Amino acid sequence: MDQRLQQYQDKMNKAVDFLAEDYASIRAGRANPHVLDKLKVDYYGTPTPIQQVGNVTVPEPRMIQIAPWEKGLIKEIEKAIMSSDVGITPNNDGAVIRLVFPELTEERRKDLSKDIKKKGEESKVAIRNIRRDGNDAFKKLAKEEVSEDEIKDLGDELQKMTDKFIKDIDAMIDEKIKEIMTV
Image (cartoon, rainbow, N blue to C red; front, side, top):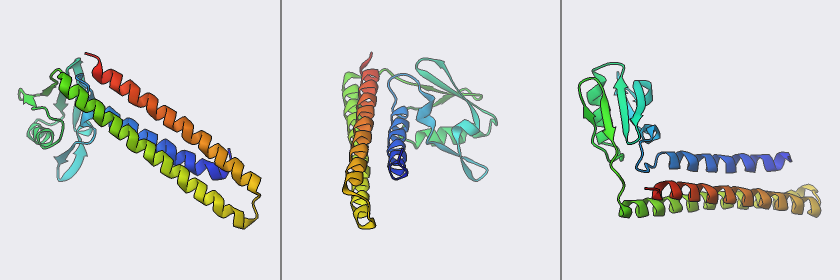
């Protein structure tokens, strides 16, 4: 692959990876430990991810269990979960914290579907902006004695790359909506 195209492919990959991470944090009525990925706990004055201060497991399809390595962290973990946008009240028995995920209502599923489509569209816009930046950069190459044919070929390759990434995003959107709508 041409060196000049590689940087744009890398940027497009990052946009798709970001969307995948975003989608992993959307709860679909089933327990997914990734909903805790962005949560930080105050661990001796340092914001630390929950996964690094305890054992996070999924013992049942709709439950996440967090077993902190230090009992004193239970209150800190609960506080982090309560102040987040996870939307679930943690229960603890003094040793472990349990998050029980309720079944999603039909209305909530439709709202999540809209949110998924919106995030997908934002990623497509990001991909198209990367394509625009690439095309602008290729047009500037004309001043550096690069042939018009070569510039056109670079633009065509960039378009093919863009189409592939847009198609991948559409597949991710469809897959996530299918997951959300499955009762």
